[in-house]
Image (cartoon, rainbow, N blue to C red; front, side, top):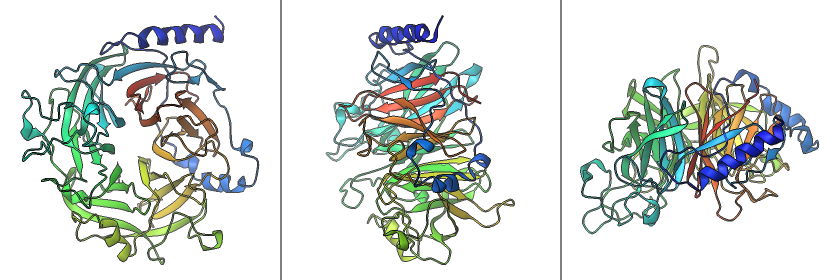
Length: 486
């Protein structure tokens, strides 16, 4: 059968399943991505891109899988021979009797028993969005223990509507076997990070940190264990990790520290050093500084001669302690500035891989198309910790406004773009890729230009054979497979 005929069969399958809304029926086209190291191959990426900055964008733009093929279901355009299953949708009934909340966001994948995969997914639901939350009537259902929620309301307050759901997925059958609410009563759970002891740290990104009149303050991290039997877990704020507009976290197995991003136009990069291994309840919170350059502005909004760092350049870094990590004034970053911490432009996705930490800053760079930084923590192989401006897209509109990011097993970086970039000619949300050689490609596209959809939550299965990703507002979770290049 020719390639075209294969695709026609796949798209017919998409249409069939997309109109049949059951909790576990897989929908559609599958693709295949792997999770593995890329650090060594990317060592020269910034320099490669810098050398091509004045060249035609076509010199850095490639099509390793060919062009995207239109999905007749109108959900997810992928290269030919790549397919997906829709494994979860908002509004469907879960095992605990509740409906899947909306506003899907970042996500983690863990190995389960008998080949199952445990996914923990964030829901970025705000207090004024009850139709997207688990409690559409703005009250905790009687069958739930309200003591398990971080903020269940009370005193004429309604419960907060953010949190997480857990999905038990069978990759053999391509079906979701179970879904349930696993964290509740939190605010706008945006991103987070995977901990190697089998938990997901989910982060709040509140809008009103400095003026909230709620009984309980928000702006914290919470830990959710990857356990198919626990059900709704007690939400305990990890206050030592700071109170601010959190985005994502990345765990460094080298020393057990956790790196945290802040989604502010003048945010910091934080590091949490726990008092005890594998215990995030207490420790020291720090902010990153450039050595010999106090309060450096790494956003690169300044005229070129005044910029602190350029693409491909690296700088030595140090860390400064923060004394009041739970300040009610939303001034943690101000504390850091006064101590010489560096400014970043909307730090969002952060990902650890083989000794390096990659950080997306959505609005960074002179044109605000975004930046990717690469942090090398100190180690026996790299005694002096440093930060490199890894990628700063210029006039090319292929890669803009990076958000969540992760690594494919062949070394490619997969990036979810934040909403629809104003620089994109298509005005459609995309999944982009960057090869170890610094070439940029498009891997996926949602063809809906009306609903401001956004790719988020990209993460690979533990065996590296499936890429899971969410589309927010559409609120579908996809399992993608296919002929990933080696």
